[in-house]
Length: 313
Ligand code: C5P
Image 1 (cartoon, rainbow, N blue to C red):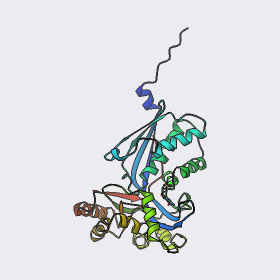
Image 2 (image 1 turned 60 degrees about the horizontal axis):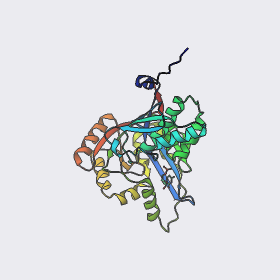
Image 3 (image 1 turned 135 degrees about the vertical axis):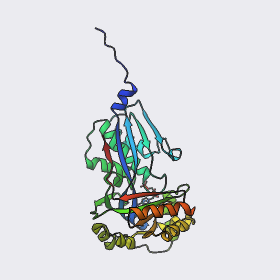
Image 4 (image 1 turned 180 degrees about the vertical axis):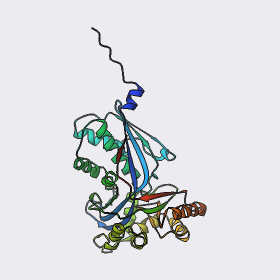
């Protein structure tokens, strides 16, 4: 008898692919301590997942390949520095297999914008590869790999709302009592996270930076779903550093406030700016005003909390 093996065709490959949807984040509180010996900063980081999503599809392939689509796809590195590639490599190495996978990223989260888009792709690729390769890793194993990939990656997996301490990777999930509405003003170009932390250090030279602690008022506002109270408690210790490196952000923050936002702040290390608004209707008004102001490239509307990395059917 002769056995003929037929190579898997495109249709077969597509049928065996796994797609994972992963949210962006905003930091409701980013309290930053002094620089540690390892160069990182201790944080009290209150993450909120918002309804802007990347999708990562893992499909069988020979070797590791990454492709990306979306308006800003050209700004996404497609080499081994991409956190999606590193996720596949780390997971494969742990299981002694080779990282044979084609990762395709549908990018909707602003690139290098302080919304954890790269982290989202890392968490998404990890979950997608785990399912594609049938590894059934435990949540704890996945979170461990996420923490190796980057400080924000564990939260991309978990979603919802959480307090991150240490580098921001040690998470405690937080209760959220209602929906919050946001507008995000996307700036031209990105800001490098290490550069913003470096500027934070420069601005605090000779200053005794206090231990970062989560604000009880902010945690309360989240738990009760009170947008006005949350607006009064939002704080980002990286904001002066981001504005110092990109002074034009001050005009964007001002434009959103003038348009009726409850609060305005830089998202993470920036340069995306975040505006908390009272409802979905106000979000549309503020987004239109921000776009018309000419102080940002585009404005996006989103709500929180949003679910973490999820395998789509
Ligand atoms: O953990 P991640 O790779 O995302 O961090 C990127 C950079 O941001 C680090 O190299 C460091 O400069 C800075 N960072 C920090 N303290 C943190 C998280 C990040 O200084 N808690």
